Image 1 (cartoon, rainbow, N blue to C red):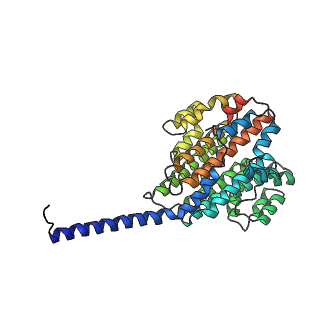
Image 2: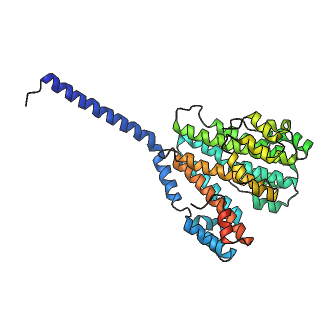
Amino acid sequence: MADVSPDLFMIIILGAIITAIIVVLVTTRQFFQFAPYAYPNARVMARKANLLDRKQMMEIIDAKRPEEAFILVEEVPEYKKYMDKFPFEKAMDMQLAETHELIVRISPKKFKEFFEVQLSRWDVQNIKTILVAKEMEVDVEEIKDSIIPFGRLKKDVLNRLIDSENIDEVAEALKDTEYHEIVQEAIPLYREKGLILPLETSLDKYYFEKLLETVPDTSKNKDIEALNSMISTNIDIINLMIILRSRVDGLEFKDIEDYLIPGGHQLNEWKLKDLLDAEKMLDFVSLLEGTDYADVIRDNLPEYEKTGSISTLESALDRYNIELGIILSKTRPSTIGPMMNFLASKEIEIKNLKVILRAKQEGFTPKVITQMVPGGLK
C-alpha cells in the first residue's frame, strides 16, 4: 500500500473533524428545537392512551338501557369526577375544558399565548349562553347549570353575568373585561332586528381575531403553517354557520358583514355574500363547488330537507372542522402536533358520547346510533 502523504493525511483528518462538528451542531440544534416539546408531548400521549377505543364505544352503544350506557362512561376516571357532580352534558364539557386548561399549563412558551386564547373559548361560550338565556328569560338556576367555569373570566364576573336581569345588564357586568365593548357595540343591531345573532357573532369574531394575533405572521415555520391552516378553516366554518343562520333569520348581507370574520381559508367576502343571496340550498351548494365544504353540505342536504333544521348542517361542518384538526396535527409529530391532535381527539370523543347518550335516551337502535356519531368510530 502506498504511503499517504502528510498533506493528504491532514486533509483527511480535517475533513473528519469538520464532519463531526457539523453532525454535533445539527444534532444539538435538533435537540434544542424539539426539547421544549418533549415533556408536554409525553403528557398528552399518556392522556391520549386513555381515550375510548372503538370496542369501548360499541359497548356503550350496545348497552341495553341508557342507565347502563351512563355507567360505562362513568367508569372512566376522568369523566367520573364530573359525572358525580353535574348533569351528563355539562360533565362532558367540564372535562373538555379541563383538557384545554392542561394544555395551557404544559405548552411550550412559544405557543402558550395561543393555547391561552384558545382556552378563552369557554368565556365566549358562557357569555353567549347567558345572553341567549336572558333573551329567553331562563331561570337563574338553570343558567348556572349551563355555565362551564373555565376560561379567563373570574368567578365574581360570571356570577354578575348570571344575576343580570337583561342583556343591557349583561353588557354592564362585562364593563371591566375585554368583552364589554364587543357586546355593547352589537346591542343596537340586536334591538333593531330583534335577533340574538349579532351579539353571538361579534363575540366569535373577537375570539378568532385574538387567536390570529397569537400566530406569528410567517409561512416559513411548519408549526405556524399548521396553526394558520387550522384557524383559517375554523373561520370559514364559523362564517358559513353565520350565513346559514342569517338565511333562516331573513337577514341581508349589510346586516351581518361587520360580524363576518376576515382571514378565512377558502371563502372570501364576495363568496359569502353570494351564499347568503342564493335562492335555494342547491344553489348554495353549487356556489361552494371548488371548496372543501361543498361535499360536507351536499352529503347532509337530505337530512336537512327532512327536518328543515340547519343544526344538521352545522353539526356536519363542526365534525369536518374537528377531523381536519387531527389531520393537520399529524404534520407536526415532533412539536405541536400531539397537543393539537389530543385536543381534537378529545373533542370528537366527547361529541360522540353526547350523541350516543342522547340517542340511547330517545330509544334509537345501536345500528342507527353507530351511524349518528359525529366523529365516527375509528
